[in-house]
View 1 (cartoon, rainbow, N blue to C red):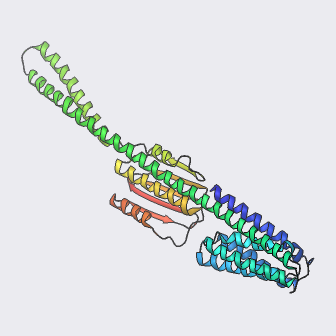
View 2: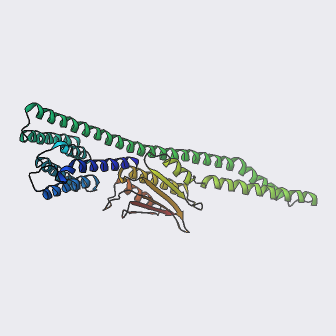
View 3: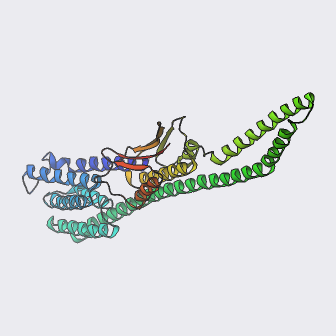
Length: 365
């Protein structure tokens, strides 16, 4: 998703800033109270903690990585005799906490960071005014960074929820429209059968009787009329059959439902020979709705490809995104409901999360 790409670039920028502000100490240009190699090792722990805290899919690992990053940054600033802009690392740690812990935990971290800054002001023999200005300045910078990052994350979450709601509304609209068309088709089919089919049946019986009357000329005309009447009756029955069994256009329905989703490019590919009934089409639309919603909420993907193919026995819908995947796969209510829906149709559902996330559903052709 585009929002995820912005986060990645923001993370790269933070790493560059962290390396930049630590460069003097790393190059032993600034005095340290511990050996330079030890300080470098702690700095690498700090960077590693930031990366794992923001990139790992396991919550417990993210918590542990954030703790490592916070403790490491405290050690870095406390062991540098001349902190200078090195205190910006505390701001980076506070901003990163938003991606891992709730807002109140980030505020607690800011308080602890501010206490560390106050300790540094005392250890470096700064006067009260200078120490107060330094502490207050970095307190405000941390608060501003934390709150702006929180606002960004909430805005991205709102966009994902809006996109998911858009998919639900579009799916409901497609199914409602199709339900209305189905009702109208059934009404027309009944009217055709009651009004025209009955009359043509009577006409056929009457002409059949006339065939046995005398008169060669009359017989020839009744034969032709009988053929026309029977042809009309076949046409009416064929029309009624088509109206009762005609399924919605699956490709159009899927495209209408997934068109112009913010941050997710959905590619629809339906084979021309795909033919499914109304119940199966509804199930495939519902499956697509659930897949797209889960992709928007959880996959952090930029592209979702949905293909529908058929063979002699079944129709298969396969959806794969380019997101982070998950292991092991846990079936929530949505996927469990989909599995039950397709089992009722003598179909099946499979999930594969080896790379990205792939959902495959199959229904009888």
